[in-house]
Image 1 (cartoon, rainbow, N blue to C red):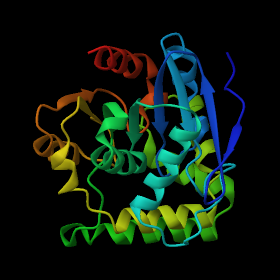
Image 2 (spheres, rainbow, N blue to C red; image 1 turned 90 degrees about the vertical axis):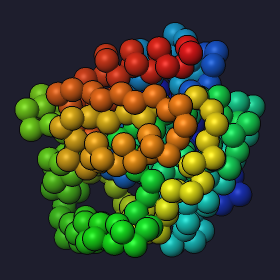
Image 3 (tube, helix red, strand yellow; image 1 turned 60 degrees about the horizontal axis):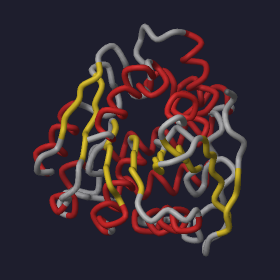
Image 4 (spheres, rainbow, N blue to C red; image 1 turned 45 degrees about the vertical axis):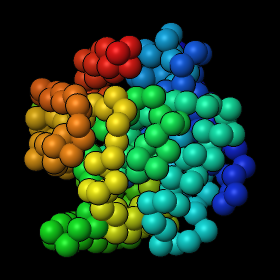
Length: 267
């Protein structure tokens, strides 16, 4: 199977692009800051026998239009995500958010719990809007400076260097770099602004649906402590630590990643 072709849906703010594969239970995937709908190649391929796997290009990414506000809040992304879910005719979905996507998915599930059957928070956090995380702003500003100054290929390589484990297969590293290289400044900048101004600490405590938090032992972007913070806030949450992979476990070593998804989503 090749990666599914792009489809587009018109929403209130503009076009959202997405890819879909398979049938039956809807599983919606939300990529990270350096990702796109292309990130989920191995999930389309290996989970489509059981799930209707749908992944968007977040607003400002890939073939999706930017949001109207160049400095959007997390709820603007939630509105776009829910608009796509509605447009696709899904009443209830299993929802997986990775990194940046996890911040959006956590907020969506907290605000609209009846629309989410299962929630997977993959290599993510509560967001960086709390004053205790103020130091993170420098990291986002550095990434934006790199995006302005480097060629697309150089930016992709720089991002992949932190996203995968040091001993990652070079072909996988190149794939991650190729996806990250397609970031555009408007969408990436808007997403960085959203992350720096979101704190899901309070709303996520209200979650009362099956939730799993995934982290990876070689992740240089989202630490185990950030995952632990989420787990402590969500009653009855499942915790999984993947070994030997970095911040892109869905592509670095997709077989165990997909296996834990299957087990959790069958619960």
